[in-house]
Length: 212
Image 1: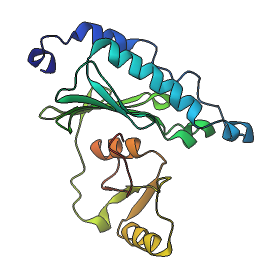
Image 2: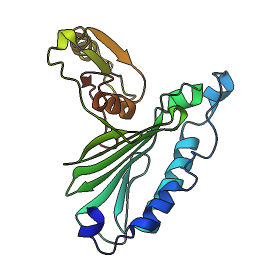
Image 3: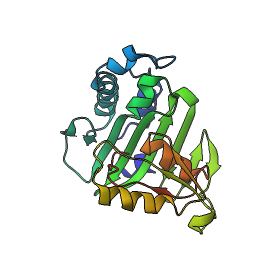
Image 4: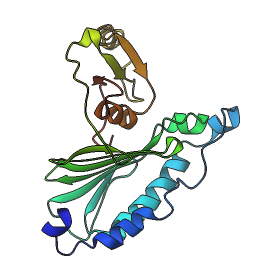
């Protein structure tokens, strides 16, 4: 649909770029060790960002909003833009915990119209488009029908930029107590994708970014 609306968009070239080597520059560590945690957090994130930005710029003229760099200029400043988190769940990645991934969305006038969350270590790829539903590895997914927080499994997290004062934590804990079960997996993108696939009911987190 997007390709039909944008004649200059080369879908075959874009899909070829997407199918190319999409690693983060190095495999995830097999297990936790102090050596892994001493690694510069930004190293794998920057490598992943460079790979993805290069591929997107090669096939589309749109500007890119990356969580690592901010706005990256494109060949044209139109209604469309990409939003990118090249490595969401970096602590998980460094510790060898498989809940980490890449989040990419296409925005039109600031609103997401197409999104992909890929968790490579788990071979899970979530895709959604406005008006066309969502899939997990090609299979249709739907959100939970649970509408009572006391019966739902809550996905949440504490972002690195979260407020740590007593009042903020009291509010946070109050929200968590409303759920039947609470899960904190360390990746906002993965948690949101799991809500889309009915693997969690609600998601609640303050401070999450658009790129997630």
